[in-house]
Length: 585
Image (cartoon, rainbow, N blue to C red; front, side, top):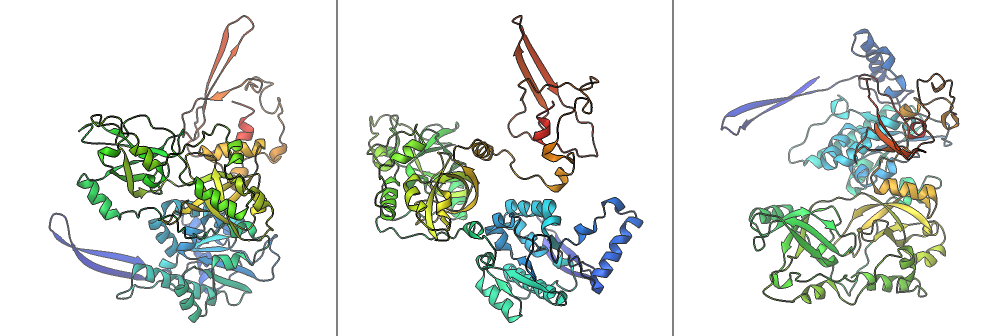
């Protein structure tokens, strides 16, 4: 079936052209359920089987399990009735970490949701695509092309916003699945946080749920519930909050007219209350870029290291004219006050925190604003320009390795599992501020390294708000600290997919080196396990193929070994794991 629409538009050259958009609808798109034998799905299977005969695909690449990954039951499922999930776009945006957990299975990803997600968050879109590619078969993730199905495609109504049209398309697809699978013992659940969307779906007799309500039906759900976030911000009468950020249009207009300066914020590794960007300041240099300081939390205005920010220069009287002293942690008094309220016996001087970071410098009795003003040495000296952040164009948030604020350790260890509470997590990266999360397992976080993701930073919150991702292990453990280093330095760190693991020997981790089998005895390979060999590939390189070693010989000379791995396979992807590469170069 062909649907088309045409319209006229004016080109840049002034010509008026007619544009015709064609949209093809099919009646043979499979629902993805392995046991479905409806007319539509039977026709779909029949046409797919004809593809190898027509020479379109290789018969060996035709895997029926990938075509129908949705399962009625598996070995781990104990319920009599299984649930198929249809999440809306916001579920993937806000709860992508939950969908990456193996416990979430049988998920129908609508084409409408994928296209909308692609426009809103490319990062989350890629993560969803990775789940489908690597774990779609074993976890039951299926992409349903509802926008190209004759039964589920809808046109946009007059005066209907694109978002409302997409929500309606999701409800129509959910209703189709409900009717399509009614002969099976299956619960079809539309996941959405939108109350209006849930009400409209209820009128269509489509079962809906919020993510939190669904997770409560799972066993051992404390970790999953902690990943929801939704931290509440308590009003602080002694603090007015941060200044509101300007809109994107205001920021771009200010940059264009020279009122604002754009740059990437870099936080000093020695002083987390001192940041800087590089930009052109006419009073200092008309052409060269100079360092512009941003001093104190108030002036940083919720910006984090790596964010692309827009700043406004402060008056010249506030520019720094001498090397600045270490700024006080402007949040310290509030933290001490809040933690003392939760646990009156907590040491408000942060002695425990200094033990965690023995190199931390002690604070002085100067706030950021007063310190800037006290820098007046000579009015004739221009000094270093200072500025305040008025807006953020692009966030550089990632997942952070953290540990529980030691001031909260005692009170947290006394809380029972399942008790909801808000705690502060201290990032291992000292350039990142404390992160406030909500947890039901505060007792389990004491003495642990925890991976935390940022969600938001409202103007009325002193700290950014985030959510629990997973526990990495006990602090001080060798494997745990190794994981922390890999994550903090953005080294690819994830479980290998089944496709990668299939290239390993069947023995897996029990594989043992055999000189005869592995070519050392006949001289085709050399055993270098006794030599310290290091990689010389640059940071960010994904192909680790250059290595060298250097050892001192008994006669005083040095032996230098240089190795280069050449890849000649053009059409075959060979997967290597670090466990086996550690034996050979």
